[in-house]
Amino acid sequence: MSTLKDKQNLDRKPMEESKPVVALAKETPPIIETKSIPPEVMIEVGEIPKQTPQEDEGFLDETIENLKQKLRGSKKKPNKIPQVKDDITVKIEKIMEQDLGDAFSELTPLQQQEFKIKGEETAWEVRKLLKSAHIKLKTIFKLILDWLKMLPGINRFFLEQEAKIKTDKIIALKERYKN
Image 1 (cartoon, rainbow, N blue to C red):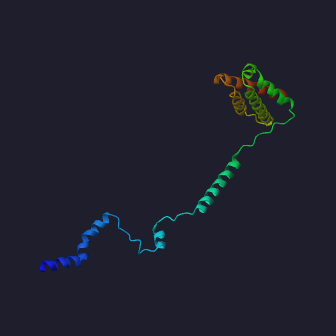
Image 2 (cartoon, rainbow, N blue to C red):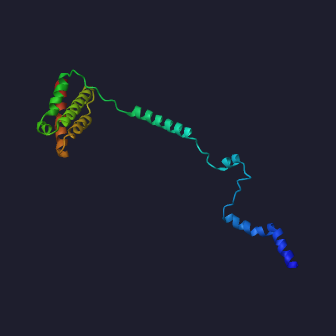
Image 3 (tube, rainbow, N blue to C red):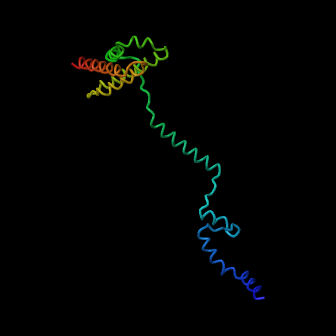
């Protein structure tokens, strides 16, 4: 009978034998019974609350509006080309179009129109730079070079050389009108 009592005692004394189990429990995560824990406590412990679709939409709308505002402020506004051009602007355009007849004639009509519009904008920008007291040669050179890069199939070094020649002629024009 003593063996039966020992067996019954083993069944009755789970605390004494559970100590080794506790040591094992440190290695494995404890099992939490959700029946005894109220839902509010589970949220505080670290469960991420689910967002409603309305909150998600509000967040997305707010983010989109912020991005739109940033983009609106950073856009460059196109320069309007005046309808009436002064003498210097016309002469600048003449200098810019020198020696480009062959390359211009090879363009499609749509490309010719784009090249012409970009050339007029460039001439207007150059004219604005020439009106200032300090002439920025590098800026004028870059404007002309960017305009010339629209021509397809022309060597980059040739374009740089042409841009330099045209910049020098425009500066000579400025000096002539200055005196």
